[in-house]
Structures are given as C-alpha cells and as structure tokens.
Image 1 (cartoon, rainbow, N blue to C red):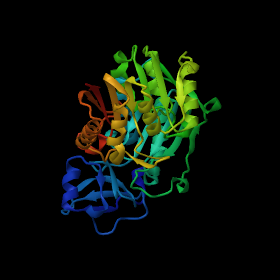
Image 2: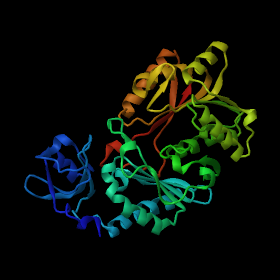
Image 3: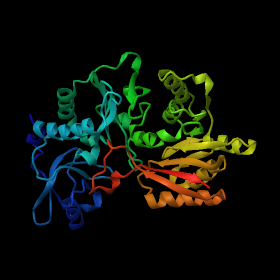
Image 4: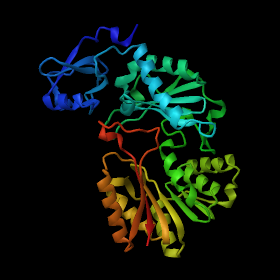
Length: 405
C-alpha cells in the first residue's frame, strides 16, 4: 500500500499567513505557533497543508516537538513508491557526479531538507548505509526509503539511528523502531575501511550517527592538502584524527592529536595504521584540549598549524562546553601556541551560530591573545551536504582558515 493511500492522507492542517508565505517560497517546516486550530495526532500523521483560503500548500507529516510539520511534496501528491524512488535517484545521482569515485566511497547521499526529504539523512560507508532520523515522527517513511535504497544501491546492510536537535528533549531509547539494522547485517567485526580521496578511515556504520568520520569536512581537508608539508600540526578535539591522518599523509613534520576520549584516540591510531603510518611516531593525548593548550603555552611549545573543531555541546573537566559561549577563549588559547605566520583552522557546526557571530567570536579570540590575523578562506560543508536556497538553516557548518601575523 502506498504511504499516501492510508486513512490520514486526506486530513488537512491549516497554517497562518506567515507560514503560508514561507511555504510558498519552499521552506520545509511549519512551527507550532503557525498552526491554526488543533495539530492532528499522533505525531507522524500525514496531512495536506492549506492556507486560509483552502489552497493546498503541500503534503506533510506532523510532529509533536519544536517542529509541527515537515513538508515532502509541494504539489500535494502522494508519498508513494514512485515519489521516494524519484527523490533518492535525484540525490544519489548528484553524489555520483560530484563525490563518489574509486578513491572516495563514503558520502552523504541524502541531506534531509536540502534533498527534499526533511528529517531524513542517509550516509554511505562503502557497501553499508546509515539512515539517520531527526525524529520518530518520520518513521513511516522507512519502508519506502529502505526498499528504494536496496533497489538502487544493493547495500550489504542498512542501519537506523536517531539524532535529535538540541531543542528536542525526547529520549531516543524509547523510540520505535529502536536503533538497529533494518536490512542485511553488520560488517565483520563491526568495522569497515572507507576511502576519502584515497585516505583510509575505519568506521562503524552500526554506531551511527557518529561512526568515526565526518564527510562534511572533506572539502576542508582538500583545501588544506597543499599546506601540510613540513608543518608541525596540533589537532584539538581530534575524535578519530581525520585531520591528523591527512596531515601526515601530506608530509607534515608532526601531528599531535588531542581528545578527551581514550577510545577515540585508539581508533585514531588504527586509522594511522590503515594508511601505512606509524602511530608510535606521533603523539596522542587523552586530555582536555583547553588544558593541553595551556600547558603548551606555558612550556613554550609551538606549532605551524592548529586545527580547532570542537563539538557543539560536550562535557569536560571544566563543565559544559558551548561553542557560542566558549569559542573566543578557545581561539585565544590556540593562537598562543601558534608561531608567527602559522595557520589556524576553526570550525563550528552549531547551526544557531551565524557566520557573523562566528567571525565575531574569532575576532574576540584574536584580541584576547593580542594577535592579528588574516582570513584566507571561509568554507562550508562538502558538496554532498548541499544547502537549499530557501532553507537558511542548511548552512550549519562554518570553517575558517586564518594566517597569524
């Protein structure tokens, strides 16, 4: 049975004039305060959105969190097999043209709202796929999605996980279906080696959404490729050390990887081995990045290139880290261990922080460190993470490269 043929297909949800204006421009969400009347229950109810005059604005699925409805078709058509196959074919074909090749077999195949599938992301890890849902309210799309993915790509396994927005207080462990394999089975040992422009990374598709590599940083690593040679590199918040591996493959003199999680650094060492690099010849520090930066400042240790890629939110010895609040202090600390003419690479994946706010935090950090700098590049997510023109929220990742005077 097609999704659009069920008993909810004809239900209507009226929105106010503000929402109608945005929906006509292609915005994919309706917020709770834009709903006129009662929001149909339960979450995941399929509805036709309509303006005050009864004009159909699209077909959507409702939710009971900070988003009231997500729009999947602006023509009001059915959410059926043909629709899903068309959506996936468009998205996957784009990645095949721009990203996937013999030396790159990992990519984001579906980027939610930006590929006209709100709340749904699909990552490719070699022959395995990870499906990431922003909410259980869109789970009714899973049968259509998985069938279309299997038909199009013939994966060895498809894993389901959830990633909630920081504004969503629900507990993913209570969701149905629970995270797990929807199709096929896990790779042997749980890991698979994938390639990013020839760089090998060991990932765990069954531990999504954070499987061990972030393909949205691919273009940043590509930009840095000509600048690694001979440099002393410090990689803070290193996770599984993708930047460190890229640096050493690119001829860096040294790469120091810092992360609070011991398990992440053990995986980082495995990534070194996967690339024919000797992990014993590099440093891996299981410590708080702030404390390491302060120690290096005090001992006079300096670097030619520092990578700062903090999480949006995390817990450390000094309490809750917030990119918006703590970034100037972090930038100042990183600057103090950089030699003159050194390069500083800073990333923020917090969508609520605008490019203007991000640059403002950088300027404040340089001021605190009493150093000046020049912006060499301002980058975003890799091309397999496109941003829909009518969806400003799609521009979540901001990465800058600064040369210190």
